[in-house]
Length: 357
Ligand code: SF4
Image 1: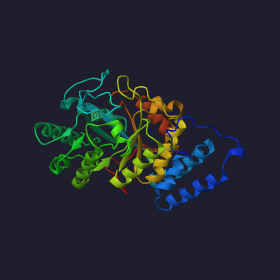
Image 2: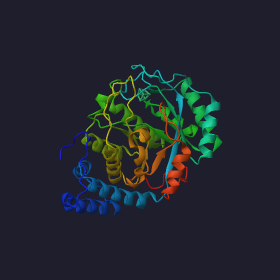
Image 3: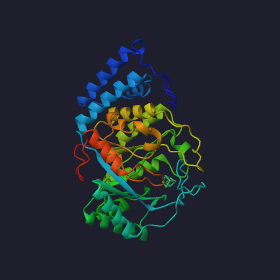
Image 4: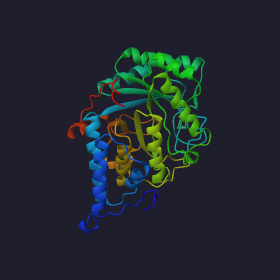
């Protein structure tokens, strides 16, 4: 099967169309991953290219077992605060906050201490493990802004209610990463967005290499890495597969999978949506490639998956972004917590527990 964009899955629920060979292959790969082995890129590509509904459900069952083996029934909940909004100098084609595009996104400078405390309080009330400060700018250098950012991180760390995380763009010097660590930062969000091949179709104002370099500085500083990407931007299944392998190589601890929510005014505003089963299959493939990482479903969940949202966990996800996203709305946290309860999943994740990753 070709590694196409993935729209239009043909239903093959009828017994005679189910390929018993595929079933055995999926089950064999599941056993190998459960036994601690890594799957190869060609094997993973075979999973991304599955088309039949029955095969995708077999794949999800395998991914669910792998999640249970390595993550138990714990679900890691994260939330974010838009710490500096809009007017970003970069041209990421999916983003409402880029200054290159006319969108309705809010614009404001770096936030005061008060909203940060409020976000931490609210997260704590809802049992959310981490609060990430997210800034819409190219990156962070040494200077007064770094001092201010470190103040907010110290504030979050001192509150002791949630894990202090941040996503502050490109970091070019080791000293900046070390300063963030000294301030108490535990985990830094920096997506690779897609494969190296597809990245220039997403952004041309900075490079994939700069993103990898940022991750390398942060790792050296002892900060955990939250890095994933966005699917549904026009990339192929091969690109998704390459992204998952790049994240494995980069040593990501948490892997956010965002699903494009096309924003009016951006170059991707008319991108066709991915079929929900294609999304669930992608999550499962990520679980096979990244068995021990937290796979977190983030932006675009409600709009793209609708009634199938709860199936992300049976597809292998072990973490969830809750509360509102940077520029779009999510479903209420109470609804997410109820969904976890109904599935027998436990959101009480140890906020410092990146144990076996
Ligand atoms: S994704 Fe980040 S770097 Fe890219 S335009 Fe949006 S805010 Fe700027």
